[in-house]
Structures are given as C-alpha cells and as structure tokens.
Image (cartoon, rainbow, N blue to C red; front, side, top):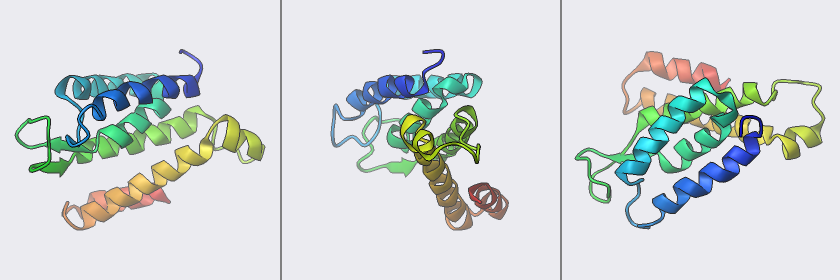
Length: 152
C-alpha cells in the first residue's frame, strides 16, 4: 500500500515468516528471500510507508547469516550486524513517518492506531544492543558512542 503502514507490515511479516520457519532449525532466511529482504530494506529507505514492515522483517528474520553462504547456520552462525543497523534505522524512519514525535498525540492513537510504542522500543533496544556490541566484540568505540547517542 502507498498509504497504509500497518497493512504493509501485516503483509510483509507473514511472507518472510513462512520462508524463515520452513526449516525451523535453519536459523536464517533462504538465499532468495534474504535477497528479497535486502531489496525491501533498500526500497523502504526510499519509501517510508514500508519502513515499519521492513524494520520488523529485518529485526525478526535478518539477524543471522552464515560465513560460508550456507542457508543453514547451525554450526556457522554469525549475527549480521549490518542488518541489525538497518533495522534500527528503519524503526527510526518509521517513527518519523508515523508522526510518533508529536507530544500532543492522544495516547490511544500513539498505542493502538500507529503502534508508536513498538517503533520506539525497538529503535531504542537495537541502538543499545549495537552500542554494547561495538564496545565489546565490535571494537569500535566511535560507532558505540554513535549508537548510544541515538538510543537517547
């Protein structure tokens, strides 16, 4: 939809879920759907009406990849930090797109109609998670500080 953010989310999440859970032990999307998710993320960056749905898909189904290109990651799992960063960016974009910065928005609209609480909590959680990773295993204090400041 060119206007209905929540409808887009309702369509996108089950689409990727079906592929992700087709092998409940794989832990990642098959290569074709991973490419589709990559294209969706790029499209959502240009069309914010897709940002919330794409953010959820990147968050739920784009976390893990395999070093050797295998679809199954049981023995070679690694977190795809670029996908985590993109999910955080898309949740932030969805906050802007949804008008979730409006301090005068009625609570019912904020929670029930626009799911602003979900947008905010996911954006903050992902930025904090990224900050902690860059402080430790990522060994990049500049990126850690950036993500920490975004979580504020």
